[in-house]
Structures are given as structure tokens and as C-alpha cells.
Amino acid sequence: MGESASDELLIQKIAERDSAALEQLYDRYERQVYSFVFRIVKDTMAAEEVVQELFIRVWNSAGRLRTDESAGKISSWMFTIARNLSVDWLRKQGRKPSEVREQGALEREAAPQSTEQEVEHKLLGEQMKEALGELNEDQKQVVELIYFMGYTQQEVSQNHDIPLGTVKSRVRLALSQLRKKFESTWKEGVKP
Image (tube, rainbow, N blue to C red; front, side, top):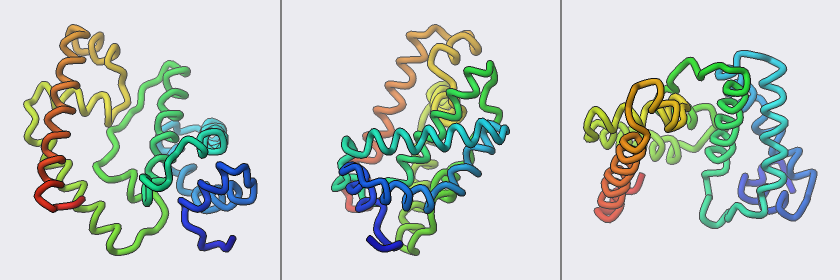
């Protein structure tokens, strides 16, 4: 298996318990993931622990990831796990994520991409920004707090004096509206 093996092939090999494939994936992403995590936790030891935990999860979860459906999404999957682990670490320390991630930052921090992938990600980012702009202010607020700032629904409820049921309803309605927007876009043949 050469250095140019795709992420999907590496995940398949990791699912078969090939430690060399895990090492290769680690070498490919460790620097970017560490940098991404460090910007969230702002602690070198914690960032190292989160990166290690991420790759333990990759090792343990690779068999459950369907690579035929996730082509090109392995890096996004890993960065999402890294972000969640970072937010969990902050919560355990009694801290909050201090910054909203800029739209598309997750993708930019992944491995270098082809021009076609970059164009697709930019288009998806623009479509997402447009779709978020169509939400009402209440829905947009809870989506940003939960999905971009890392707060739980309970924290949004407590910190913004919004009943928990209302927070859940706003999230459900916002996600439903976003899903409809993207489904109609895809049916029209505009693929992100």
C-alpha cells in the first residue's frame, strides 16, 4: 500500500486491523488535526490527548464506517470527531468554546484537495450560507450556538432563557428547512 492510498482504502484496511494503514492515516492528518484542536483547546497537552483519542476512535470505528458512501468525507468525519472531543475536553474543564468556527474552516484544514473538490466545497459552503440566511432569526441563533459554537441544547436553554422544548423545536424546524433546501437543490441537479 503506497503513500498515495486513498483515505477510503486506508479506512478499509484499518477496519481489517491493519496498523500500518492507521500509521499512514495518522502521518497524513496528525499535523492538521493537532493544529485544528489546539486552536479550540489552547493547551498543548490537551491537544495531543485529543489527537490520540481521535485515532483510537478511528481504529475502533473504521469497521462501522461505510466507505462506499463516504468517499471524500473521511477527513470531514475525522475533523468532526476531533471537534467534538475538543468541546468535551473544554466542558470537563468548565470552559466554553471561545470562538465560532468560520464557515468552511473545517474543510480548509483537511488535507490538500483537487481543484474539483475545492470548487464543490466552496459551492456547498455558499449553499449552506444561503440556506442559513433563509432561517428566521430564532432558528439561526440556536443553530449557530449548537452547531458552530458547540453548546448543548440544555446550555442554550439555560444561558439564553429559552425553554428547552422551544430550543428543540427551533433546531428541529431549522434542520427540516435546511434538509428541504438541500434536497430540492440536489433534485434540480445542482450537486454540492
